[in-house]
Length: 394
Image 1 (cartoon, rainbow, N blue to C red):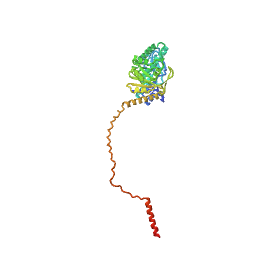
Image 2: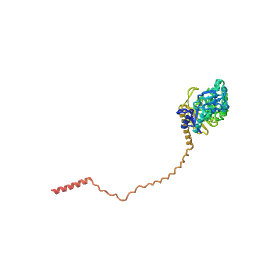
Image 3: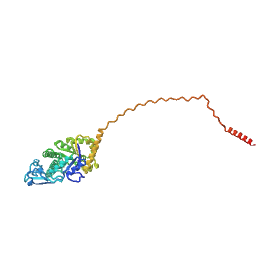
Image 4: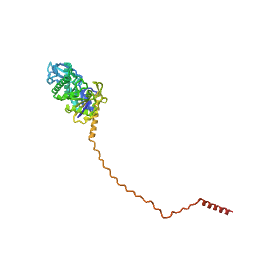
């Protein structure tokens, strides 16, 4: 199956709640949505008297994402399944799209009823090589995003891995691979395997995320899903992927690394400098979806196509239209009736030989003679009659 949807609540959505956005996605004929978990507002406090004895996920009007000491580098998954105790520290989130886990469950039920597949994008800014505080905050934000994804029924926790460190590139890649492995393991334990870490490539050369790095990470660590973000790869490699053979090889690499369920981001992109680019509406960008649509029309695997264009759902519907056109061309070509057999033309009958008539034979009878009056004879005869009349008068 192939799904299309926007990266966020549709721009045309009158209501700004998450459930309003899912309903609008469905009414627009789309079947996917990447929820944006951008602004993080954590608050750490002590468990209140009426909250003691309850499971963290059952506390009303609270999105509890961490229980226990906040000095640990990673949240304890087991603590989230244990009843809360008095004087225990908890960390909750204030999120505009949901107020508690019961709210998330209602959104999950709506998405499933409308057949809209959800994924969730973690905060965009992460830093694993800065201060220890920045590293812990980046790890926690990706973990918190995984908890929200689990509550929404979203299968992917999408993220970048941030800048390389100050040492060698190889050491940075090795260190980031260890971080990604720990995050994937944490998600598997906490969500019972329902949510996987999805790693995006980056268009900036100073940020982890070349084609080779993302694919190698997915091959090394079981469960990690590589995201085929085509505009970012186009910016990183400074190419428009206009060559169908080149594009097909790229798609096949990501399909193999993701074990047959491709997650794809698409938008237009404009290049400015060696490291500068900007995401644009699809019709204004340097890369085209037409060749990719032809490849996807021939696929035998599931695909989710997310529009990260500034036009969100408008370009999401445009991507779907381009795919349907490619699918129609493929179907027409495959099911075209065979060409009609041309029967040989019947042989022409031989024309009868022309017979030449002999010239007419001359007749033996003499031709009838025609009396001719001469003008001279007629004048003499008239003069004689006039002389007779004059003699009779005298």
